[in-house]
Image 1 (tube, rainbow, N blue to C red):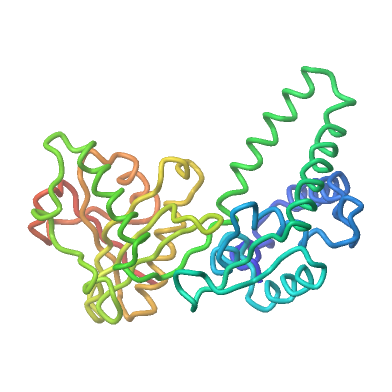
Image 2: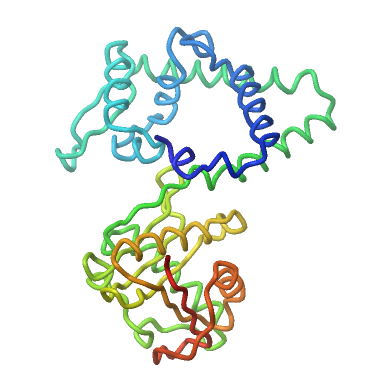
Length: 306
């Protein structure tokens, strides 16, 4: 089941809104020719054509393909097998690590991808052709906004190894932002610890949000049995702000804290992080007396979990 379906609660939505979205989806599907197994007239379903595009001229690891498109291993294997039978793709062991499988285009696959590019451009041009210049600008602007607003529904949240390269990149981005925003800068060695060991089960967890396989945001937890869990290292990339990602990160952290047995979540934050403070208060966190000696903290918050 897709991330969108897992998080949606249709009973809470305005029925007219649901109807409009479904109508929009039908119009787009018809407009791009996704209603049959002969996408763009090439004799294959849209899923196969999308894989040809994603594999691209340089090839790609199967793991990256799964993460980028949110595909399960079985579907990906079947689709790649079909493309291999058509002589468009080959799957081999990665030259640097034979445990890693990598897909690449054959010469015929490269030619087919080029033809799909041409046909896709023609479809896009066909959408614009009947419109005036003013209408085209409105449509392009609306599409850009729709694409941005759809991003939260495509985000995937998962507990990851805090020592992993991308997890460490997220935490590094968090440190760099604090160093920029705090008047006196930020030195991680002076802050209370939340190292990889402390963020690995059963001691804690690091939750990473990904969009098309790329790490975009993170939040960490330190567990203390039934006592309050500590929320740490919450970071949302600039490109994902304003889309409710922080709220969803908080909800994911609270869910994992509750599953760990914690009865509450507590956190410290700095005066400079106005948006974070507003988010915590909106999410039901109550300001409490200081419970730690975090040198960068100006506020301490706690929320009971139910």
